Image (cartoon, rainbow, N blue to C red; front, side, top):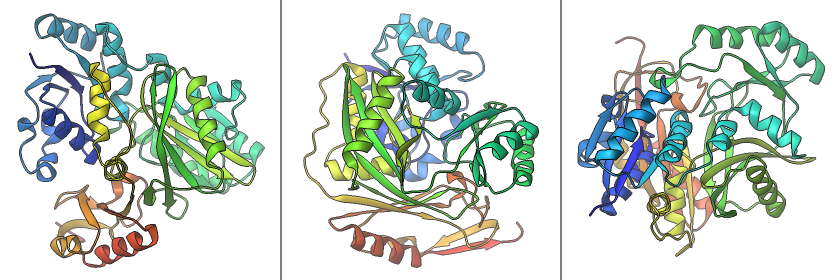
Length: 419
């Protein structure tokens, strides 16, 4: 009898696609639980076929606004079709997935650890209380409190959503006046993707200078297995959108960074599953920026697969299903990506030259975030504002980056000021 996996929504990017392909390859019966299955129609171009070919059943349920009803509905479904594992792949559903697993008596991450990691204020507080170095921080309810704390820690400082993802609306504040516009934007735009309400308060914190890296880990039976480190370059302030990344990265103080991440995961009792923990390496040492209770998103997970010579997504599914798994690497190489941005703001009419870009040595994947007719911006405020990502694989990082920029030069992005 086939194993039965419940997938609670999906990451529409490469990571979500790889989870679907992995489950199909493993011969697992997949039920997708979604508030709006048509949300995933965009994935069909990247999959090369309908998403319906990768899932065996779809349950249309509100996955965000009534968690108790969601749990009760899935318990009833489990009574008819026994579920062997539950996986969430996107930030907004990670807590619900952990709660479902717990209520079904299945393997999953400690829900309290997920709740803490999904709230940047709670993460800061928990790590600070465990003597793990984090930026100076304060939870603020509005402009007056933000200015008060900004004046206390000095400028520049950072303003960010408490429960955000993808670097969306993380802003560098250089003066008290700089708080006004982003705070008003947050209040006037209270909904995330998928109709999820934003946490109303914001986080003000110390601005840290230094390289941004992330440590990719798997927690299992009180052990933390380190898959590797990802490095990044980010765009110019006031926003902090990742422009390039590579995996695996080598850094000078690797042991110190890894140990801090392991200590942080243990401090919040993150006991099971993948985590993507971001760290800024300052002159005074590393500081934890955030803990994400999931596999690294976007094209990073593709780069990990190429580097490991196997599907990390397959092994994670096996782990959640109680099947034998392994994260040992079969071979080594370096993956890297370059984010594609528009040169101007307007309506996306066409992207020409994709076939030419694929002909550049080392190019393995071109993932497009936007469809023709979408409004695109030359001033990105988050990862969702990028047009897409070009990813490559090879043995030498410098050579790979040259190939990425060469591939980008082959693309002709046509943007119009009107529809």
